[in-house]
Image (tube, rainbow, N blue to C red; front, side, top):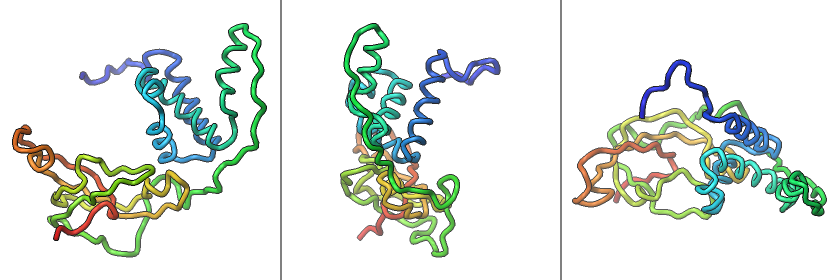
Length: 206
């Protein structure tokens, strides 16, 4: 890794910039948000996530959001691409849009809460050992492990509900410090890892 040069372009190839823009526009056109886009990335298969590269996966996630909201029909992009290559295939008819009935309560993801944080700096907390069926920002490798709260950050929109348009459910975010040996065993290199975790991801150890 090296620091960026002052004249270094934002994108190494022109198509990457176009892919980035198309992904952002697609998510907005579908009525999505940051978390719904992350959830779309998570649902891509291996070929579309790894095989198509970084900006390829952004394009694929944007397409998936358009499919989710009924703006694109399944197979529409492939059919259009084949026709642009000179083939003659029937393109599927446009479906009835089904964008989510969603509107953020404020700009960005930070929110103000009238309640006090449930955990204090220095408190020992355990990351809940849970396996949500949908989107979450709780890393699997910390689930069930105990750490220490280092910082209490401002409240933010909970990704687990926001990604599925089930409400913002804002919560405090905690920077929790874990020991590498607790996470990966005595053979792990000795270091401490800090992970930002939403309040509902945490519980008091028994």
